[in-house]
Length: 470
Image (cartoon, rainbow, N blue to C red):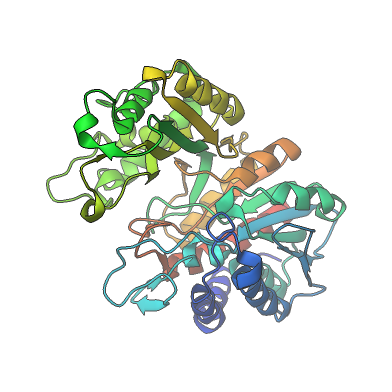
């Protein structure tokens, strides 16, 4: 049977309105911070509450033969594993996560990370779009097909609880569950972004990330700032070290080890995306009045965010608040570094280069240490099969009224690199709801509900085409 498109969209709309949005509101209320941000997550129980909410919702869906299980490995965060038998011997793997980034300050009036607020098309709150909706949308897409009698392959839905911490527990679960996961021919990841709310956007690459803490120590204890000039400020020494890896005037990373050539196909996709988005590529960012981006060229802006390395300082220690800062030469400065890498650069090798560069020949004999986080390599999609390219295009035109768009993403999903290596013959559909102003990880994060409805219908469309491909 062919998929009835009006019926599909109507069912997705009803399910989102009646079931998904209320469930997401309950999910947003749970401060289910990822283990990196809540080391006592076991004692607090918030991650388990989020897992239980998703498990309970999914178990109630009327999908033939659906099995829902929470899998727990000793010392690891749990995963939710769901299986819908489908037809034939093929497998589709659908992925999402339930853990969240921390609260962040700066939420608007009446808004907050754990307070679900619906304003028009937007559902505000932490984690709704990143990506608490994923399990709900995945099962709704499968249920849509079953209600219409449209065949689909065996679907396995895997929902983890440590993605925002780098998915460190997931490889252990994937290994333990390997016989049940099988060898999927299609992987659908619902943890990415969209360039706007008017197309189906697919993610064709993800940047890697290396990070860690750079600590510079020069004194045994703080002393009166009258000693400045004799002893170098630890902050100045940190600046010197950072200048070894970055040109602070342009932001360009100095070592060739952090760079990669942009493939011709990705360059063409970037140009198409830039043509569709125009200056919205940078205008949608919350720049202060009068502040400028590093470039106003849409193509260059997209490449800077997807295929070029970039360094950010995301945290600091050893610096008192201004109101508490006396005239003291501080003994040390510590900075949290986050270095985004092109998709094809090996993150482990980049970490070694970063550590060697920062720790070599410390200025003034200071004690310099760089303690790296677990590196995460990026991901570059394999060549898209004709059936998938055609299916995504038709789905976008059917449910959005515009062609499908592909674009690299500046963030990281470590699981995709791992799956790409484990299932080299699989096709990948990476997509998501994080669009303009949605501000994942920051204040005022929201989910655009109409896009969620249309995206769910698109997933159903692709699952149907996957089962019917030749």
